[in-house]
Length: 256
Image (cartoon, rainbow, N blue to C red):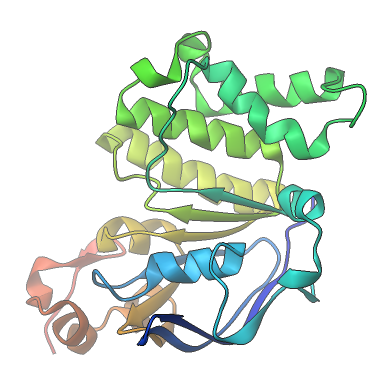
């Protein structure tokens, strides 16, 4: 598998009369691992929705492998792009393995349905996430953290080359947060999946992501390695916190 190339050219998004993203330019190479950071209301989730096509930009273009998003047919886009939302609601009975199997729908034969390769992908995804013990449980009965792991397994089964995640660790305990971060790093390095995740935990993001993208008030104000992005001045300016209380890449930030 080879990762997808993502390019944003001048992306702006309006909600009514309010501009929530303003002229975002971004390029992610295949297999790159990057994290979107920023305070509440900065536009992080909106940017993911614009990339996935859930929100239409007021200006600009999203390109995946050089092709504008609007030119993809939905099945082809689903084979290339996967999205993990911050919270998933399941309103009807469904086992975990049935949820994971939904990731294979874009790959299934239109007449023959699931094949051996699909069942293998489902088993592999469940094993890779480590939720074999939940396989036959009703998704509605799971904790929020367990449900999030099941959704991650569905994404793995989907086999997309570009993975967008909105707060993937929000409902997870500490061990599963670390496991998830290591999984994302493994997907990028071993499977060449291009990963773009939204996180609020600055310490977690700076430890596992070599590239950070800092949004503030709808604008991309910094892009680079953790210590270059999360400077004392920016922590004060963007988050309004004393940098002495922040850990970046495993070490406390030294005030300027």
